Length: 177
Image 1 (cartoon, rainbow, N blue to C red):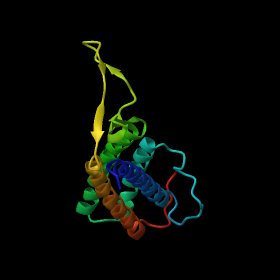
Image 2 (image 1 turned 135 degrees about the horizontal axis):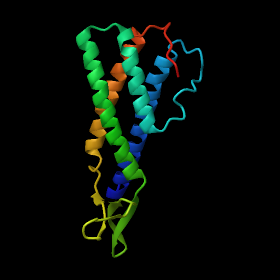
Image 3 (image 1 turned 180 degrees about the horizontal axis):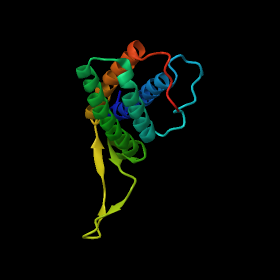
Image 4 (image 1 turned 45 degrees about the vertical axis):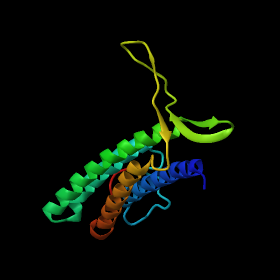
């Protein structure tokens, strides 16, 4: 596999992993809204964009948490961890938008591909000098390593939160959508 193919593969892995996180958020929210699965497939949360989905599920989780009757220290840990994870997810959301709504420029020399340049599609102007600013980065297969680790940590926590809900959230409770 070529260097550039590995970069495109990492972009795809990032996008698919992000979609998995979105789905896990919906699963958590759907469980809180309808733990008995009376409405299937669920319609709540379906039309929310990622930013609103993160905020809505975070709030649903905070409202549901006391009903799980966890020891107070564990409940506080879940509350703090979900807030931290929500902040991470917002950071990843902004990064995803920046990457997926950008230009990818192939750098060729003598007809051979030498590298791949990411360039933000939003052209900015320095307010003080009036100069055009470019946000660019030469990509490598390692370019997404930090964000993938952040996503992995968020995924582990969201799975933990979902599992706690399945085992501790009363099934006779329904939240307003």
